[in-house]
Length: 270
Image 1: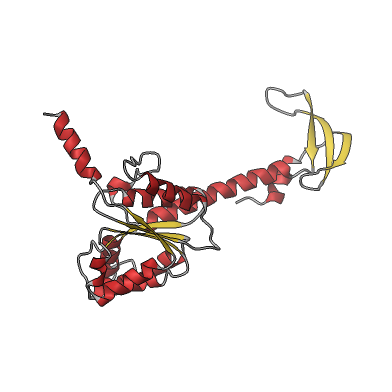
Image 2: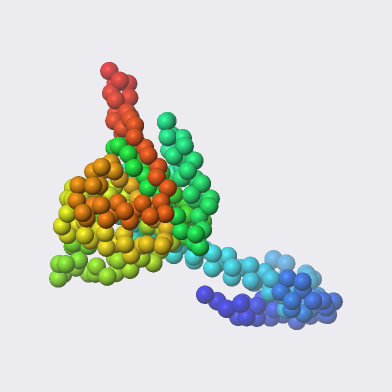
């Protein structure tokens, strides 16, 4: 990125008649107003007043460039590290159909509004299939990315598969790199916990390890498992206990939205 001084020199490279001198309230520099002629272009020969010394406009350009670079970096972090089911990629708060889950939508929006790195809070979405838990969680992650935070959205079964694949000698990805990416961001969404279908052994132990190293940071968890189903093994109980730490539960049991939409289409075509 170009330095402020270099750009300032490019814009102050002209001479002419002295008009005025003052101190800029914005950048604090001494500004000299010069009256000079245009040397080229369609207005060649015309007189105009130029300023030498003021860096306010240059600072604005630099700030805008930095903001754009930051947005691009945050988007890249989200896209490169997230493991998302394709159907979720267009999910937003605006296209969520709340039905009986209006309160869940409001809690999700409030989480974004009150997000504070110094006060980590977790959300725990629990309920039946197809009620919008993943939709709301993804919408939160997307909204926070747009606000300038680093976020990752992870389908838990895909995460475990990705970690397992790193054990292949030909893998270009390492388990350490995956774990570090998850550890370093402001928010991680662990989606569909329990969908891996195993209640003990390596998958659950590895999942606990990943979740445990996120302690003290912002996390969101979604699961179709009931509280009693988390009691069937020691490993699941450990995960459930960790997820409940500093978490606000959002229960979403109800009609399967995907099934409802499918039946609606069937009726329309009868």
